[in-house]
Amino acid sequence: MAQINANLEGVTPQEGKGFEVRSPGWYPLRINDSDIKTKEGSEPCIHLEIVIEDGRPGKVWDYLSLGQKLTKSGKTAQEISFERLKAIAIAVGHPNPNYIADTGELHGLRCLGKLKIKKDPKGVYDDKNEITAYKPITGNAVPAPPQATETTQAPPYQQQAPPYAQANTTTPPPNNTQAVPVAAQTQQVVETNTQMPPQTPPPDQAPQQNKTPMPWEK
Image 1 (tube, rainbow, N blue to C red):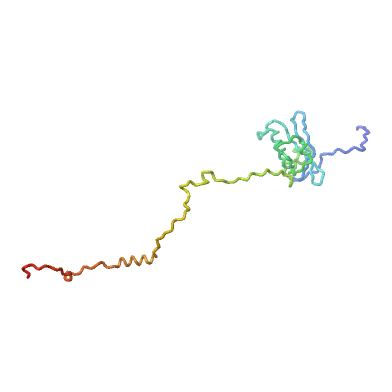
Image 2: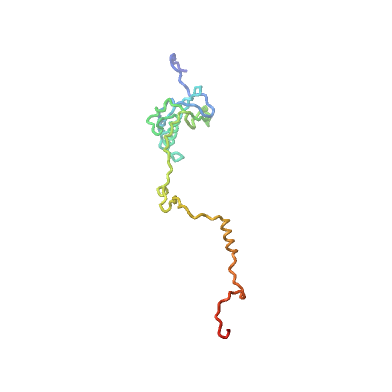
């Protein structure tokens, strides 16, 4: 027992972290505060304090390590944290998610976060929520830059055919020869084939020739 005679009038009670644990799912979030902390014997880490805005008191924390040690994925802890930081910047609609000079630029911005429940394997600590993913609230997303419209154009060697390959579009000269109907042509062929060759008169009807009689025929 310790006698302290503490006057607590006007003192704001300390806000504990024993918030109601949310069921797994997507919740509206607001980034409330941030800081870089370094524990003894550890590397610096960004602490993000995030408020769950679902009508009930609740907070959740995200930790982004700035360590240079390699992880099992082959990336450093800082590389993985920067990938997550950029996902947060895109989700909250940061005007330039490719460059963040100060984490204070994220304060007050909102997004959606996917929460899961993390249990203490030893059963010493209470269950708590962790953020596994971020995505924009409708209207938060930064619009993508307009893409240039590509115009498909044939290469120069296909744009115009050489003179010798161009189609002849000149009108052919008129043909003055009148076409003979097929029926008339057939009739002419039949008439030609049916004409009889000239007949030679028989010997007894051969024309007599004027012949001068010989002296003994007088």
